[in-house]
Figure 1 (tube, rainbow, N blue to C red):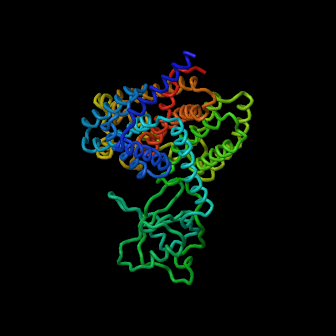
Figure 2: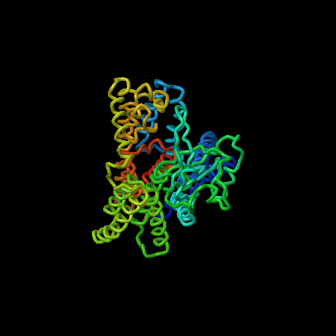
Figure 3: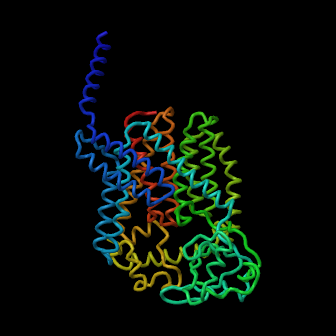
Length: 520
């Protein structure tokens, strides 16, 4: 009786304290505003960088204002605080000491994306909010998956066949600052845009070229295997003929379906890496789901299959391998031996399909030395490593973010301009070269601490809390996949991907805070 009375008194005191500490109208509206920006961020992250960054900035503003409104919300320490701050500080030092300080300092906005971690980790408190955000992220990704499949079903652009030598398309040129090269449009090319407008039919192309020759050339964006140049085609040179095909000097045309999936992004690399992270999260949820033969299980499985299919259409070998390793890790940690065998058997047809798509879309094997992209990576990585070790300054503080764009000629990069200018196609080399080896070490320490936090939290979350457990499993698999693909891709330089990575990191830290001492 005494214990019961004490519990009642404790409950009464807690209710009184809760009422006394309840936020006023301004605090309440700011809390609601923060919550709204979190959901907007999650909805936009797989689909729009502009909307995602808008949600991030507004969320930070609301949170900063909320910290000055009584009662101030508590702040929670995380296992990653020192590593995140240290990585950002070292990046800042490198930027101020860069060969091109103004350019590098301008890139600090992208480096400040780490605040996304705290925006979520500090403001997601109730478990139902955490779960809702996770489900909404999967659903939001399903939107671009449906869009991708719709594009491939309907086709996109104008794919031309058997282009004649006297065709106006054969007069196309590639114009750059350094030179003008003849670059005729060939049979099999897919013309995606003309003068910045999407090509929906051959009539749009004819209308654009049927203009006075005195006007500036038409700018036609084409897709040719892995190359997406914008070519200039003189106007006013259509051939005589009764049909658009005759006027353009082509045998026939269709809608193109041989391009690589990009979702709502601009490039397949971005889309592939984003899909790898979110598909890993979905796999983690599905593996943690206690009863898989339910409506929830069916919807999750459908979403995962869709994301895997869209990833297949990106024809991204590194992202395929990353998701495969992530899947193996998640399955190994969360499934029985019998289930592992079933997963392995089901994966074989998917691997075969991937190799077939790779050959059809890119005409190369999985590890093919004839592939220009592999040779390109080997070249730029060799040049980057030589530049890194050529000067102690480069080893200590790097050359500065994006300084390569201003000094590549001086440093003899990209075969002195004979191959397209870009980056080092490796997270590890790019961070070391631009920010210095100490910054690379800080980044690796951050990734290690994150992995350790996920590994420890995995053992603490009860099986009944399957969404929380799935978040940890998916985050761990996604992290391993992210680090693996980062060997041959600079995915850390892709803001869309990094925002999703930080989002999942923030959600994972919420789970780690909810289960600090509980053992399975």
